[in-house]
Image 1: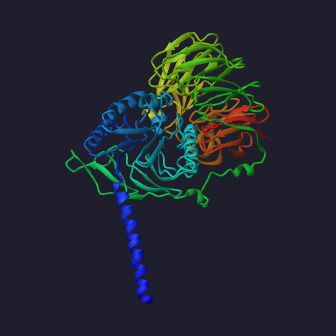
Image 2: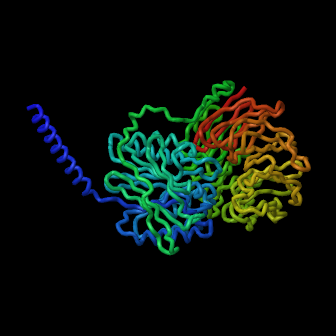
Image 3: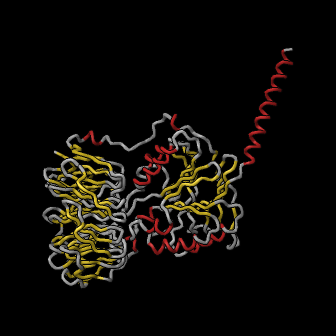
Length: 630
């Protein structure tokens, strides 16, 4: 009887399980599989085959049956120019299925249009759509307009946060896509992950690394997709993704051996989609450390603010106001004493131009194509000069003249009084990003066309032009040049410092011993230039030397460093900004590090020194801080 009872119970449980299984199987099998193409890192513009590779991919996708959509996860172009965007868009418009797109760092770092044209041409910079029961959300990665580690824009972080808040209590499965991996290669990866884990995120996609990889982001299963470029592979390619029975299957689609057709390889990875219940996860994952601030208690935060947008330019100040721009297009004036907002002025484009302040006037340019002069006391517009093309360069006010480069091959001199054009130089190769410098007779600036120019201040006529003869990525464009002792000093991305004769443009010396990237500065007495090396150290070099020998250096211990933020010296102290939110202070007389302070995990812009060892600092992720040191 016991044996019979056990067998009957087992049979009953088996039949009951089989019924549930068959019902579940029937329900699952009725769900239509989702099939889509995962394309990334097309880099239209370079190399020369990039546009051809993308066209072949579009042609191939159009031959595939039952494809629901296409996603493109960044680095659509190589240099982020409007011309490249339009070329890519013309090809992608040939797709016969719906496609979704967002930018990568190549679309934003070298953008002569200030990261405005991507949205204008493609219609959006992020996506959010639902297919079947799955919600797909995606946003790009910068950094925007600056060389630094990857960074999701502050606006994108807040966008993901708003989605998480709107989905509170919902179990809808979410698949997230970004250009960068969600790891420490992305400066604020943890902000995105912390928001995503509040919802039912089940998988993540990324590009950037140009190869197919299986990844995991703090428990979120993920993949990196191969670049669409043929590069050193047999041909161009992308991934076909099938979502069926709560499983993602990835198979590479690439060129066949005949060199003409394309084939689908065997699946290389699968992800079982499930609710990971991340809110119950009690693991402690790595996060940026701010312990260094305890090591140097002599540095105090007087006040701190968080903007709702990126701040990709320097703050300027006097005793009455501190003024900074943001990428929502606002120029904001704060009280230097307490950070209270005094006024705001809205432009119609993102602003990456550092303001110039002279008496009661503030001059700044916007990517809406306009140069603005504002009353520093009220924010009221005094005049504006419309150029018709985005501007990412910063102005210099020298006497009663404003000097400013642009993005349409021009450099202008404007009257500070009313903005009238005194002269225009129309032969700039590529666009201008940095701040010019001037002496009594000339104004000097670089461009992303591998060129550096000296113009007559009164007439705008070309005095001389210098080039390092290298590709555009090595241009003397992002570094703020230094003018001292009749010489102009440049730090170019080929890790070279060059000294030019300011009168003739002739090279006096050139050195790559110090391995800087784009960041330098000058001492208060103009006797030294400072070079921020790409690894740990700051070098001081005499402005009178014949061969660029270093006078002294200080090992700050900041690690690998590529941001263009210039070094500032004030009251005998060097202030060194970095790409991971640290400020380092070096005593110039003692030649030693005296303190370090971490503000965020994003790039720091040019530091503004106030009297009495105080600083105003802005970070790319929108923090504004006044520091006091002893």
